[in-house]
Length: 220
Image (cartoon, rainbow, N blue to C red):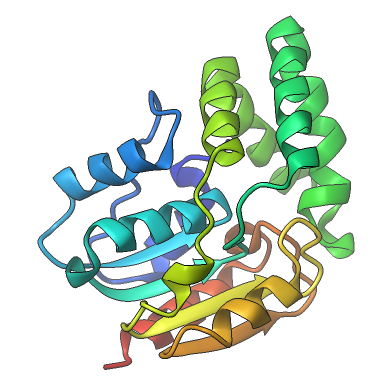
């Protein structure tokens, strides 16, 4: 439930053309990846945070020869667990009963942000605005895509471009252990753990994430 505002600091920091694709209207990662590839340059560097990282795995499966560098940020290579699948269906019902704001507010601080960022009203308002602007239909589509996603563990061994695996040290949704697992299985991966940072690292610690993306882009 984020848009280009999630990447605002990185867009400003990276002196290269940056595209944040609009992925609304898709309820599965196969179609989302195909849409990205239609509009993307013949070769490109790819960064994905959270759900975007899951999408990055599918983009790699569909067109590995087109990805020159890969940043996997606060993400998850595993299929959805059964309890999470059930919760997603319950949350869809809640959202379509008018509960999107309540769900977003209830999950923002404890699940998405590091302790030091949980009282940052400016940050909280941007995150909430993104979710409310996207609305219930996008929430449903994204929830279904996450619920039915492909396990990407076997894909990790096939990734052969320079890769940065980046996460916040206080990410409770996609913990550090997930990123250690990915970095240990991707041949060209470097692991970066950012201090005082939760799940939305591009917004919580924008300078650190921008620095690591630029460092990745300098690798050959």
